[in-house]
Image (cartoon, rainbow, N blue to C red; front, side, top):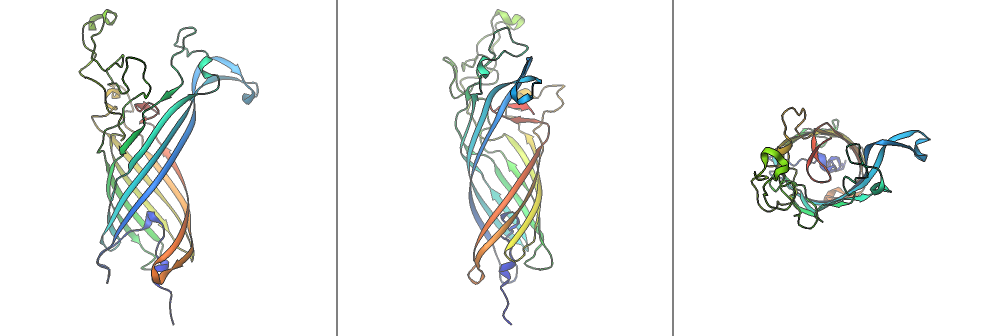
Length: 331
């Protein structure tokens, strides 16, 4: 009796798609993928204060935090990827995410510019303007190389699920992020060096107010820095995913973990202070779950349409990370 081609049991999930080689008549497989991603974030930024006040949202209770600003960030990313089959369900992959545009800004939130200062400020002093804009960044985010192994394959044994494990190394190949201001004050540069106290791009000598340091230069630098685009870290990522195709539906789930180690030539260096307990980037653990629906396919011609519904949740541990001004801060 005629049977359905085995390709109907092949996974449609990109996370579990592992090319192979030297497998029967299939001597070599290579997958080329180009993906586009748009990411948008926003969040309220608040600060502690010694001025408690009541509010409608607090039900009459005193609150000790006040609005500072609203944070906005948008990123457009293009990622070319090559997966090369090495043996049965074993593949080597190369990815290189390219950030087309990354913009970040702070906008005044409510009446934040007129609110009382923090406890360490002088009476009536505004410590900083809540409005801020970083320069638009673009470039290679990192270069990733790794391996994937299909421990189980539903295509080979219909009684088993698809199970893929793998790891990849992420290497910094471009300028790391630096603290920059797209709209600097008169006499200042956009991307000053960390030692440039007045941000004018010149290693000026300290004046008499610095005591014994009077006459010494701010540091050994000249001009300004590149805004940068990468995180300036070397990363190791491990993952495991499992799925099971049931007719025209394929549910799946999986986990991944990312460990990062800061490079010496990044903004992490000036903050690596003796006595600080956490000087490393945070650990990120991610859980993913979803289901793909295949409403139409022609297996004899290797054609199909799939719709993938996916949710992700990420845990970020304590550590130093890049935030609005693109300098490491404690989270």
